[in-house]
Image (cartoon, rainbow, N blue to C red):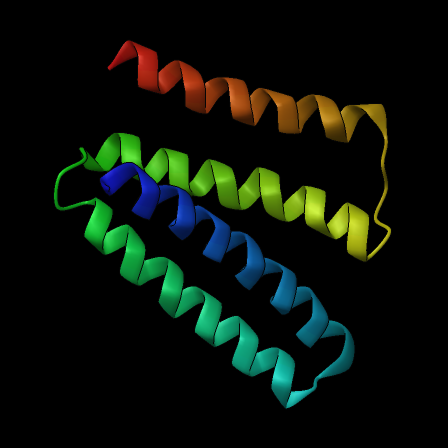
Amino acid sequence: MDWIFLILAGCGEMSGVTFLGFYSASKKKLALVGMVTSFVFSFSLLYLSLQTLPMSIAYSIWTGIGAAGGSLMNMWIFHESRSFKRFFFIFLIIIAVIGLKFVN
């Protein structure tokens, strides 16, 4: 269950970053509510996953999902640059997080 909490926490981080993009573009209160709700959801589930998972692994996976997923979502929703370099570095984030799990 702890891994499910962690993955859902990462998805909440991803959606919080996406709502942050909506809020910075429009300054609408609904986007602000979505952002705060997503981050509260994310932190709550991260807290639950940290009850059994080591913090070094859980935090790196949570951050990796948020960073890589947020970047991909912003490319898709806000039409940010889709250069090879961006995809390459997102790939490196994912590989680094997987590597941390196997090294532990």
